[in-house]
Amino acid sequence: MTINTNQDIRLRLFSGSIEDYTALVAIARAVFPDDNGTVEEIQHWDATRPAHCVQRRWLVEAGDTIIGAAEYFQPQWMYHPRKFFYQYCGASSLARTGDWQILLRHPHGRSAATVSGRAGSCELS
Image (cartoon, rainbow, N blue to C red; front, top):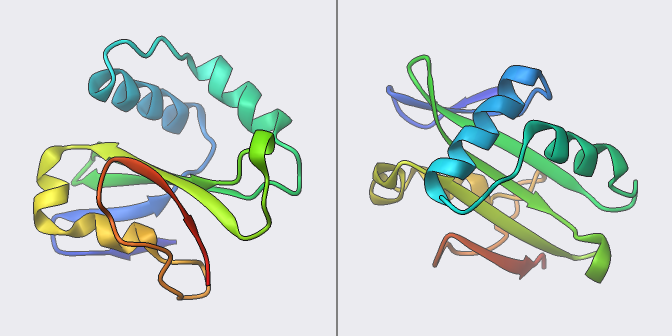
């Protein structure tokens, strides 16, 4: 499923393809230069995440270029059924245009939180 936020930028679900993992690692390294994560590490974390810990990831595209990524997840080390962490990173122009706001919607349409930084946590009400 693709959600159009404007004519130039679109949000799509992360497919789990090697291309999507490669893009995710490239974005993380560009935004966090000290990040040495690899495609294989992220695939391992995804494959070993306990079933009760929810995760959803998206990529942000401008034309044919992936310019950002976002996710929400429940970490296994501090699981709570109604608490999630969220993270987004990418081109700074996304924050200025407000296009990140669509990422902070619960799958059932309830607002999860207000963006105040790159990463954080929230509790769904």
